[in-house]
Length: 236
Image 1 (cartoon, helix red, strand yellow):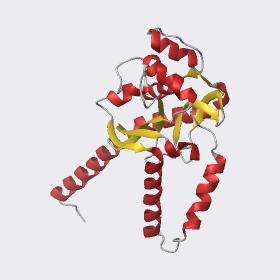
Image 2 (image 1 turned 120 degrees about the vertical axis):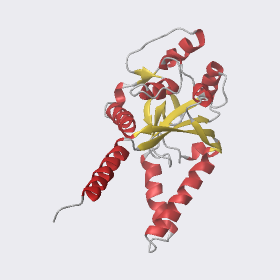
Image 3 (image 1 turned 180 degrees about the vertical axis):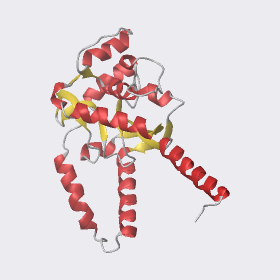
């Protein structure tokens, strides 16, 4: 059976449109600024002059996939490096935060995510670049192999793509620079624990809609508790 020319053209057009949509699909990443009030964050605050003096990059709105450079153990600020952050830790109950959304392409998202995962595979190789903060204060570039401070790390991940919300080298980027960027859209400001509770509540509602049998809060509390136990690092 011969396909009419008009119908054939429509089929080709629809196919092309789907291809264009796939190529131009967008994703969101999130820049999370926090202030915890610890002595160590106080030192960083002295350098940055900002209330929210820790920066992280997140690859999901629920803040499960969050990465930065900070202390690896809750009570030891002197052992720091690359971390998968744990925002459900009780330490963050009183932490203030601001969360910024940044729209990127699917390709850019994957490039950044894969770059971070590659670093995580060699996590112990990376150290916290405290001397780099001195460089920010003096406006002097101080390079150290495999070492970053938090906002430098976030900016360096963005530099893996054409996404540059801050017009300066990553070694000079501060958390406040992200807050001042016109490219990033603020979606939340307040207590980090409030955002996490709200996000968790949304997950519960969504799960209940898709799986009505799973309505017992204990069913959700168990994996959340396990997540809390497994991710005890990442406090600044």
